[in-house]
Image (cartoon, rainbow, N blue to C red; front, side):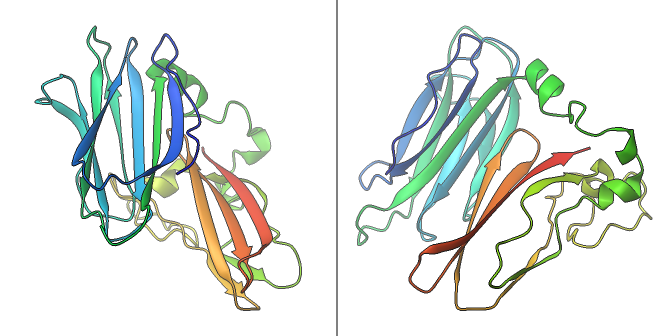
Length: 244
């Protein structure tokens, strides 16, 4: 595993915590107590290192684990949920349930991230661009011109797509059903649909690709690392995304 980063909780319940932990072979579940003192948004994310393993996450209002207010109960490479929680005197309980942990593997692990932030804070600071966009970006064609590239050619030069990119809200959920989505948007713009954006990566030499995402409560930043055949990192790129 890795050294956990983040915590402890602030007096208002806020926390951003992440770490890599061993998958327990002889434990079916583990429970974390979380104090919520203000109306807050909670997002939990888990990803096992082995695709055979499955880790489910549930959030309960009570110690008896009877009233679930959020959960992710599917078998997928990574699982996540986001839920608004109200303050209460007793803790909430985040439960990790482990399935199909391979006993033949040594030290299988899983990544865990937990973010809690007061809703008012999220609405003020995370759900808008806080003046990043000036008047020159109000035109929708200009905003769509700031989408991430749809193709990347990795040759002898360094990657050229570092920077900040913008996804217009209508590209995530269409307000006009007849509107055409920009190139690269692979989802259909439907409510409750996962937003998908496709980037083609062309490699000029045998390579491994590493991709990492970092989330806030709205969008995901992305880091791309290209490794050569000896698994040495030779290209890196990072981009931040805002929804406008």
